Length: 502
Image: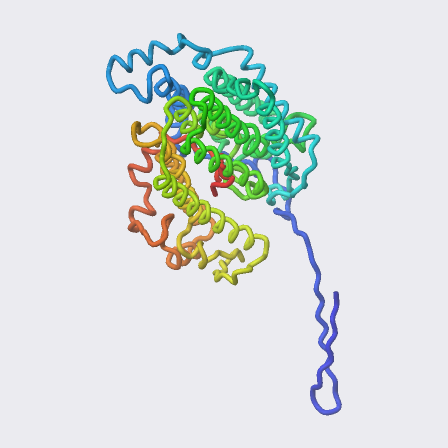
């Protein structure tokens, strides 16, 4: 819109300054790029390349089964003698109850029904449609955000079941068919990863920059397509759907089933189970309240959809993140008021840091700055926060995640290290992700990133700084950790799993 403003110049003359303002929406590339230019070949470098990704593809599902067969009411948690380990091994495929059966068609049908229910909820329930980030081809995808309504409906149905006579016993069905459900979710995850990998060669869709190496094992794990969708349903983005719906909500339902199992055994629910149920449950609720934030996570913006995400979202998150609740179902722990207060305080502090940091980032990205936070502007025009929680460390939300993870493990007591796998896993996962983030930002911002690191030198924990050589070089222990960790966020999240995690 033009704007004229008269001003007085030399005597007897008038100068009129006319300013014209216009708004243009420019494509990502003024000159259309070919398919090969948009999807260049990548180098198979992450997770030690094809060998490392092959190892994780085998080990991650294996550990999901190991967590059950070495931690259950038949062998305890965990076996402490050679004979105990032999007995645990003998129960694989020969478990005394349906909880440890390797496969059951009824459980498979139930899992398919659950996944279909989530799709129907996505389709029929109301929700906001939000545009995603600008893609390399100059387009933006639309995402329907109604995961919270799916959760509310699911919890309403669950409460209806629990209040009916025999409802508590009925809800323990999930606990009593744990391994068959693990196998069913793994079958779904493997099918999705294989089908989407093959379909990506025919539909001409945009590929992930890190999953187009040409090596099947590597690309199958990392994910070849960036935003896969079924034929004839372009609005159904499988990656964002899996990120916070079937796995995250099932995690909460499994925890409720474990609490029902404990109630049937004891006639009450212990304080430790309540702490796990409430805080892990709130994490799921908070994740779905903030569902739109997953669109800015590395899982969605950068990573392809392959076995890493399909298995992570559908199997790893629901069946390993709830290990504490399953342990407490058959091994109750009574914490008492003092210990309970300590655990609750740690978890609340972690949740506060996590949410405050993410709110600061979310507001700033939306063009809001209610706290008047300081920032620096890069040569690209991008603004980076240098105060508030993001001035204390580059990933303060990861620090909040660690405190929450610790708070979820402490209610299990100290009789076994296995229930603390979650905090160990998350330390490795988020340190690895922080390194990936820093490398990507250094490539993106160049010298500006070095200036930013001088302003915010702390990596994750505020005011605790690793030396330059340890932080910026991919040290041996972090490299080794890549082989073990699965790389979800999830999930998980984070962000749930992020979600919540970035």
